[in-house]
Amino acid sequence: MRRPKGIHRESGQVEVETAIVLPLVIFLLLGLIQLGLLHQAGIMAKYAAYRAVRTGALRVYSSRDDWIKGMEMAALAVALPVLGYKTGGAGSPEVLGKTDSAANWLIKWNKPGFGGILFKNKMVDLLLTSLKYTEVKICGPLKGDIPEGDTYEVSGTKYVPFDLPHVSGKGNRTKLRIQLTLNYRMIIPFADWVIYYMYRGWHTARELHLGTVNTPALPANAYDLAAMNNKVYIIPIKSQYAMKMHSDIPYDHLPDDNECED
Image (cartoon, rainbow, N blue to C red; front, side, top):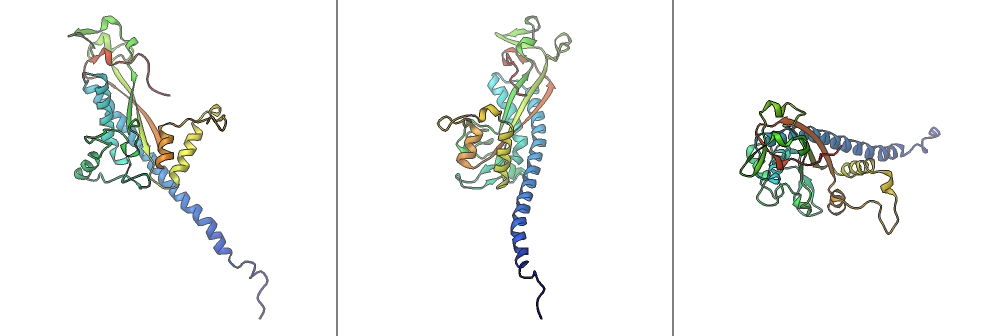
């Protein structure tokens, strides 16, 4: 019995289609998982911004740097479950670690780079001590918003009272406004670098792409260094929050200009 025509020509078609479709399906699933984790990190960033501004509104430190650091550490404690770190060198995998119990949360918190004794809130595992997990900038109030007559002085330090109606009732003078940047490290292979370079291309002005071989158009920043040297791809997630102060603000703690980015 002769076989119908076309049998030999269709031999192996299933294998070919599977070889084409299966990798695409796997890459699609990896991308969906990473985008879901990125969305979760965005939600955590909003809550972390709330905790940061609440810390700054309730307690004002003696120095401005300590005040901002206190807000950053409060945000770090909240966002800890979604923050990744490396277990070894540059080739080691990116992991989240367990935070499902108080003991596991404390173990991760005490690791170098998080809330431990060494290099607090710094990505020390990437040898980038200038890059923080959480970074706080002050949007307002500004020094120019506070007239000289609305401050009082104690031991040579000027303060802005938070509970006087003629001060707080004008232009949100006693409402602390901050911007939190959560530097989220993606952990899903393949999807991480695809999403990162899509993000970098979207947020890079066209003029910056122009350049020559000897003068690169895009200077390497901390995010690029993490990607090139450590294969760690970081997306900065920004969130803003405002809250009325619950303690008097040292006048010197206020910025001259809005430090936040659009």
